[in-house]
Image (cartoon, rainbow, N blue to C red):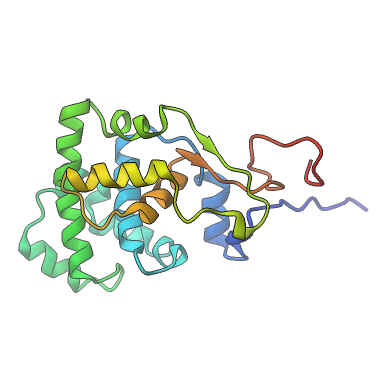
Length: 198
């Protein structure tokens, strides 16, 4: 009888298929594409006070509602568009978060003008190198790191909203600035010698 190989994943994925797919294909993957970076800024700011699972299950609706995460289009959203978004049951209908996404799109474009790309700007907070933590259990995950504090502070200075250090740390994990795959997870790039997870 053929043995079935079971993938070991980070414990936070649980048995939710969409969470598992996101974990397996996106989380912790180095991302340099500005459109994708803007997408995660919108989604992470929408997550504030909620679970990532909730946001992830609304992701496709967000894609439609927010012009496929095109910052130039989102930056031009009007008060009428805000009103229609507040009536959209497919997204999180929080006026402050919706207005923050529009505001952040404008700020995002300013950063692109200054640095050439948002990617060049954001990756400078980790000196262009991915940070890797040693995570063996859920309690090992930091809630925030100094790089996220610096990144969030600079974003705030530039006018971004709803993007504090905790949210920015989650963003950094999402776009691969930080690789926090747990030891034992099949996605972890570096395996440590002398551990039972080797």
